[in-house]
Amino acid sequence: MSIQWSSVRWFRTAVHVWLLGYMALALPDAELLWDPGIAPLSVPPGIFRFVTHALGTWLPVGYAIPAAFLVGVFAIWELIRPGKWWRALVIWILYTSLMNLAWSAASGGQQLIANMLFWSIFLPARSQPTTTGALQNVKEIVGLSAFWIIRLQLVLAYAVTAIHKLTGDLWTHGQAVGVVVTDPSYGPLFMAEYPVLMQLLTYGALIFQAGFAFAVCWRPTRIAWMVIGVFFHLGTGLGMGVPDMAFAFLACYPIWSRSNSVAIVPGTSTFN
Amino acid sequence: MGARTKHLIVIGLVALHVFMLAAYTLPSAYVPGKLHVLSVRYVRPLFHQQWHLFAPDPPLCSCALEVQVISGEWHPLVNASLDPLPRRMARHLAEYVQDGVAEGEHRPLPILQQAIRSMVHDITVETDSLQFRLVEECVQDPDLPKDRKTRITMLEFDRP
Image (cartoon, rainbow over all chains, first blue to last red; front, top):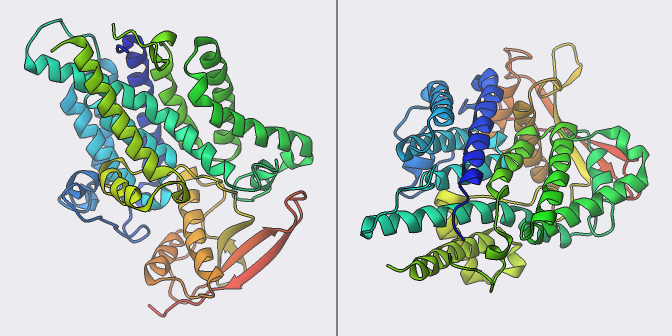
């Protein structure tokens, strides 16, 4: 159940590279994305709005572009010298505020990264020296909790989307991918020429998403599922025009890259 | 504090968080009402997420907004070659308008009207007298998804 440090290192790197990619995608369209005239400000009640909607509460929306540059600079800083909680906090506040300001361009992938960035604030970048004391105990509990929440967040995303799809008709009848690729907003249309392939892809996507939670428990299935996942997300990201969504999931894969199979199977945890 | 105690605390915290996320994101039919309300209060402020892209079913009707320029031609709200984020903005706006049209409302909400007008600034600076329409392409038979029927709805906009 302990933290896998190489997983953490690769995960942090991948998430910050995704952040840089997102900013590179967003900045050329900054005037459109962060224009409150196009996406009117929607600020929720409660005190947390000051962190999740900093732009629009205490920070003027005109600061969106400098905020995006700051996120980029801090992301590069995290890539070079990872592990400062205050830097992670600034990145999360600014990224989440930018995402919420451009809510009409938001996606599940962007929300996934926002959640991962939040828990990264509490996730140590490297093994801490073994000391005793109440503060050390709290740090260990918070760090280990953040690590497992990040892992299970990815699993939950796949499991929940599979359950939603299983409640519909088109997925269970093998027709869903055919409907999506013929939708002019997504595509690619040429795939509709192969109805059997469409049916296989529909059931394949369903099995992949429903099976992810089980596949990560054992090394061979975990590797197989992640290889399938790379093709699945590259296909949907590039073919259907949702690259930020696709690469957000792929950026989270490294958190499962190293794992002790025995320790995560319920009832056999070693508590080492 | 012993290692076992620490691990039990971690398991408790992680299980509680994941349980609340599941209650928030699962189909509402599977979650008791009171638990869902509780999960909204816990998840929404900091951990909001939704996992139902193309679920429970992908939409049978595609939707796009078009604008009529001075010459009389109809153009998409955003250039198809634009980056994915502006295209997604235009698609989400179209989906909001489509929801209204499905309920018989051909006049989008004022904030949607403002957003739609703002998006066509790169086509024309004169946005007050423009005409907009919703173009849907609807699947008739899910086994033959390529055979879509086009449905066009003219939208009514307020004078600014």
